[in-house]
Image 1 (spheres, rainbow, N blue to C red):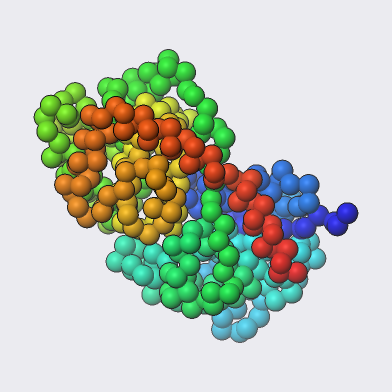
Image 2: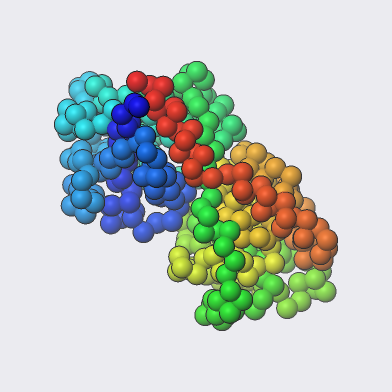
Length: 379
């Protein structure tokens, strides 16, 4: 029997106080892939934290790379030397899996990096302008240090080739998963209690995600406003997510719409309430302009609610035929899809069934298994 593969993985995002409570896709991926590694008999997972702040709060047994990622990358770029701590790390692991864009230079150890998308490079207007040019240069350079790259959807492969300058032969695709907990039915009383705690009436349409331009939330609000009165009467559009970069105008729109009593913006939702919030919805509306994968679509599928999503980037690949697909800039098409899932009970039931079946094909165990095969191929 071959010895377990010693995999170093990027634990920084889960330990740094600035990021450890975030529930974004990278955080979910890092947490879930680490948990899946821990379940594999042929893998020994070694958490690696980068920077003094994460090191201070790192879990016991973590290996520390002491410099902040941007500083370490700049120094390595300028001098050609490995990251500080690389020698000690190479003695503990066989291969390193960068799960969070912090890609170290480790010439003694193969490095595999998961690149979720190319948003900062293809659409810099959607990114925070603070140090944008430097961050993008650093991202491109460090990505090319990786011996191999994992894309999370087929749609992202040409994006990675074009924007990062990575050869197609160095890219593998490992789709993400959805946790088993998302398939568990919440008690009716629990759903009712969560709705009451946020003052929501049953039958709402739901969007979940950080408020940022690519999420297309303004068009979701506009589409909801175009629904005929006989369809929207007594219903609300619930927007659950914190304000991100360039969200000032959207926040003003949401507050104005909320004043009219038809749109609810939940700036904060307790993580323990999120599943019940999904299961209490009449439908999930996610016509994003750009997604590397689109985990909320899988979470909605597993929660048993009909989904509306986009014809763009990775979303058709994830949704298959289990969702209503709309052109995300077509407000009338979004409104028509909303009306369809609210009015057509046969369609809504078909989408629920198809969504559950579709979600079952995406598991974190399968994601981890495919990832380990990629990692072993680097030795």
